[in-house]
Length: 126
Image (cartoon, rainbow, N blue to C red; front, side, top):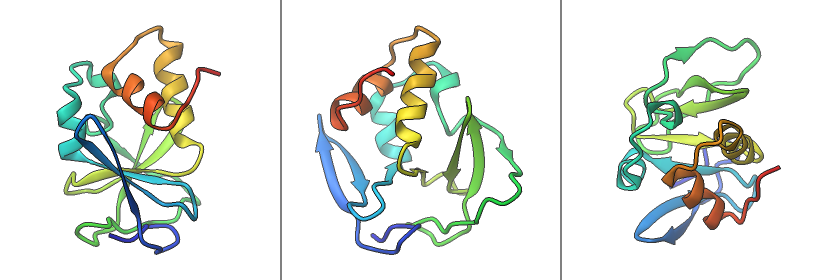
């Protein structure tokens, strides 16, 4: 699978039987919908698949690395993410993961998602 930003091959990173596809060139990552479901997150405010798509001026459209459709933009806190319109997954650019984790932590909620992402990428609360 290729990166939707720089088109380089993504590397699979695995922890607790959940796989993420990471780009060592641009440092973004792809989180499949199936992997997200494996986390068992019940709180919809931390589920990027539950958000409505938004229009963001100046944001370049990227193609889903699975189906090739142009991804839609979603806003989670102050972070703009790219999500496949067929819900195959979500793309986090470099730095967006930290923003997502900090958004979740700022609400003083410890979810499985925040813990998993923080452990995989060694992210500490800002």
